[in-house]
Length: 596
Ligand SMILES: C[C@H](O)[C@@H](O)[C@@H](O)C(=O)CO
Ligand SMILES: [Mn+2]
Image (cartoon, rainbow, N blue to C red; front, top):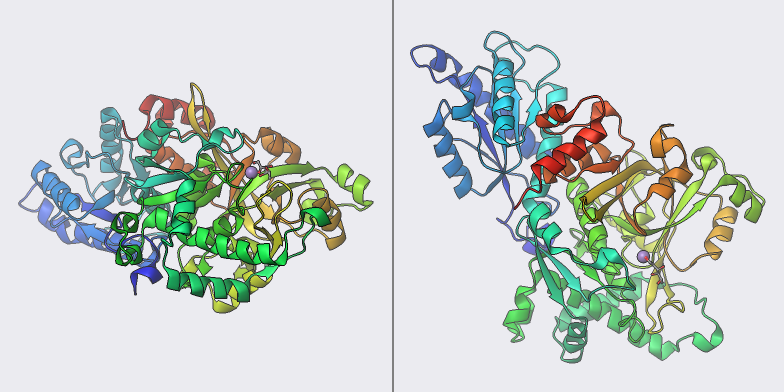
């Protein structure tokens, strides 16, 4: 696999999972009788994780098993040293037996879990409980994994409920490790006074372990005018765009329509902007060949945002093509990992997209949370009644810009529309996504022209809408709503769409209602949304997002995930068990951000 094909993060750069088999250190019978069973548990976990999980860039997940079972503090230190050398970012301790907690636990600050075998010949679960209490007493939160059903000592299988927890923990832990040390790149600054554009450095640094990088939008002009991009790739990209990106209707009044010559130039500009934004994020060795060694390095960015409005878009073609193509799982180079790129430089939506991407390995939809349409309002303006999943009202998600083309819903999984990891997307699906998208000349908001992606997301896709908000005195807070995309009868869609920006991509979203709290109605979900934007991920990933948020010590203010799907570090129970939301707030506030 070439580097380009596996994605844009460097090979060898990915965090590994460290597996720690812990054991009762007493020799002369006990330890010896447990060595093989314990090491086999570690190997089984390593095999499960490395065979099931991939990194979002397509590379396999690698596990590192400690050289020996860990019976005491010296072997714990040896394992820690090995993990440090091997780039371990997540640790899982496994044991079927009693061991000495303070001597054997992992005392680093990376995400950690313990699987205590549910058997009774040797008490792995007693160790688990004792190790949990040791972790909690030391302020080192740990996820506790304990199978529901008793297994026989020596049973080498991992029960399904344990597998599920190991995988959920590992995927979220790898996300924490993957973003650490990477940058968020602001291309421009605050767009139209949107607070999410403020790159809040303490949030990035302390909660995510990330750096903030800033590039003025004039850098695009410099690189365009001086030809600081791969000109061969530009020709390829322009030709691909001309062949695959169909221009949509120009809804502008005659006097504002751009001429054919202007549009042809605009296409060249937006393709150049795409290459330049990508190079700014991750660098490009081709630039070094052109004599631009500094530019060739990029900004080590795992996410970025483009201000666009208004200074850029008042004068130049808008960033919609650049944002949409970078956010998608494919371009002229074929299928590849999506780049996380927000419009309006909304840093908080970009971070939400980044977390969704790392949990699903797939592209994300960025959208304005534009309109709640009640059934009555729809009937008033269309004369028609909403039905099916839409019967209790719908939320219109729509924004020009970085809604990935995957968001057309023209890929499928288990017979349902999906947004898939790039390595599972077929050429037919790529073509279907491109065919379902048209590129409409930008409307009056964008005085400098450009082209906006127009599509309708196919209905029936299970999705999760999410958003991280920053609140003074409280810090970051996550909100999420699992639900479905819905298809509206075309005549209803057209009337509603025409009232807004018909040249932008539309997703009709219905949250799954629980009858409680803000999930008592679609209206109350919309009303409780904390900002103008949301990120939409494929699948019901609320539980995974909650696990990840707990690792980052970000409390969850709103969700519709059933209690039995909530999986957080065991210490959360100590903050209260009757009201999990209040306990989550207390735990996050008491523990504070992951990085100080
Ligand atoms: C074109 C407009 O300025 C939109 O971009 C605006 O409504 C937003 O998207 C605000 O988030
Ligand atoms: Mn917006």
